[in-house]
Length: 342
Image (cartoon, rainbow, N blue to C red):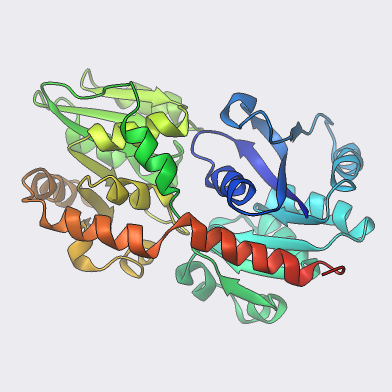
């Protein structure tokens, strides 16, 4: 079966693209990507087809997407912006669709939320990346999202283990603190930079790109590096080499970064938000108030001084509970259930 995954952007932190690749590699389905806004083709293996929308208005973009979607059996949307438009195209072509909520709806502006509601009302199946996302749905949304289920993003352990041996070496004489994610306000990197700026014995490296790049560059002192977009292998190697990985987000749907950091055995600092407190037990990480620089500093210090107990528990927990094989198997079953010829 041929599955078209529709995403907004294709970057090194695109978890949707990572999961699509895993489905292609670990099931009999053939995956293609339809990218709506921008991206780097070099981040995806050559044998997986990628189409970037070129049209500069919605009507032509929908028409262009129809030319791509017609070659697939199932369409899987991941974002309100691209999802609404590609859902219209899929509906016109009578293609079954899956819509995945990757974040809590309250993060959407009014128009994207309405568009998302319209998209999911037409989708054949709705999935959520966590219980947190599912619980934030309104009663109307829950009524429309049927059938539906939670499918947690899994960790590609083969990718993780290969990345550990990657040639790049980020270690230095200083304590290395790593952070990974889109450079957007919700990721709370301003607080992290403010907390560690100017520390002579600490090097902070942040991998990722986004709308706050210029703002964060202006705040960053000499001990802070904004690495920009990097291949996934390098991002994982950075987390492996780091003394601690910090995810200070104000809000998340479910982030794959903590899973990968835990899988390589690095101490992890997480903000006390439901997206993290629900799936991760207290003893698996070091916890911080996302609004407190002092609390964040104390959590980082605790993580740096770890005796390794939490890291071993976290590593075993992730590797036994959040395998990408489980994720791909669940999505494969969904595709087969909604396809009319199965």
